[in-house]
Image (cartoon, rainbow, N blue to C red; front, side, top):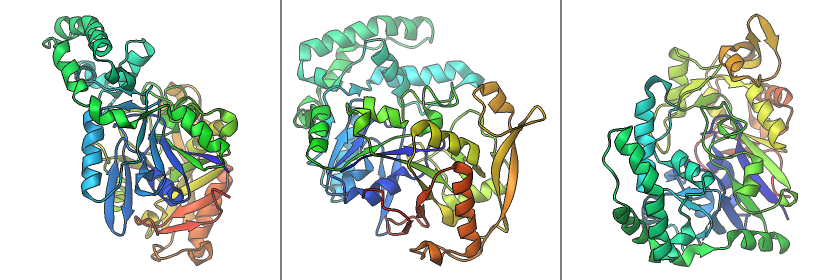
Length: 427
């Protein structure tokens, strides 16, 4: 039975939660393996909307939800999310959390916000949730881990050590008041007893599950083009949401992964700063934003909108070893007479067939469009590919050709049932 990784193939917000939810009732474990509460997943069930920020979307299904070691956790956000979902009837007693996952502390959030203000026009466009500073401490070997909550003496020592340098930075560079390490430690320890029953060696449990023939679904946050190594650096996240990140972020080896599902919208969106060749800053962009409800699940920020860029998706497919593409929000394109698709770039007068590795070249890229016929029919009730209008089918098939990958699923509406499956993602 497979280990399946679900990744974003664009700049995030592609609808990974919809795909994860589709697979969820057939999986035994759903694992969040990267990022923090700077990412959000929205799933609509029977007209009711559920928004997850730290929890994997699979919490709405019967399997065991897992927060892996690659995630950075704001405990206050986690338990607020748990309480809100529990109040709505979601059973979260099965949730397990890696002992090795790192914690976002109050000082990480402070540093994130003051740093962005300090950068001014050169800001990265972070969510201010403290994710980047928490990952920085992890790499600098100054981080606080979930397991540290079980040893009060050690926790207080680690918080005090971390704030020795950070308080100097806050006071002398950013003109902020120093943070009291006792207050931070007390705040973190207030969650200790509640998180204690959830703490596991999740890597061991996941490997054992795969040995037993169980299905494990690895759910990425953000997307390939926000990856710290492969994304549009420096306008990226601070972790590896790519397929390779599923292995390091969960403790499962690459030979255990059987399928990689890339998620892409039928158009393109991006939140925050950074290059975006197909961005529309006109009435068409506003129309896409309004029709698609393109506002961040976590931040509420309006998303930048543009036409489908086949070059960025093709790179995601190649770099992640994607085996299947899941196309979401195809219904949003209903009503357009012609639908542009970016098939190449023009950079300094030269046609380019692949996304350039040099970010300054990518920033200068101008899209070369191919114009496909649109459709006017409501497709939200379609449940098989043959039910789609002929021009809609042609649009999907052309994206397959350009991205060099089969499209195995299509989202045609918000609801979990509004999906067309062309190929089974588990068998």
